[in-house]
Length: 122
Image (cartoon, rainbow, N blue to C red; front, side, top):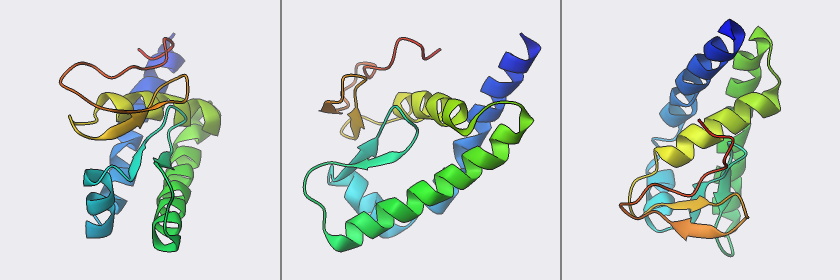
């Protein structure tokens, strides 16, 4: 139980690390335009047909996220577990108007209501 609580605490902190790398104005513009959104697997996804520049930016952000997840997962969880918990947290933190992917794979735009998340999310 203690290990699970520590894992979930670290997962919440890890979400801050990738966020620092995402202060790029191009990322903010893509997010505001609904071109990218958060996914249940903890990675950023592309909504619709991307440009090469958007594809490169998302790939770079996802590499940074994976690196942060791998670093944090050294404490006894897998990268996939850590990424999933981070995905739960990142989707929960989306603001109205931002895109996110539902557990069923559908892209939705966040409203004032809570986002649709995987039932395993705490």
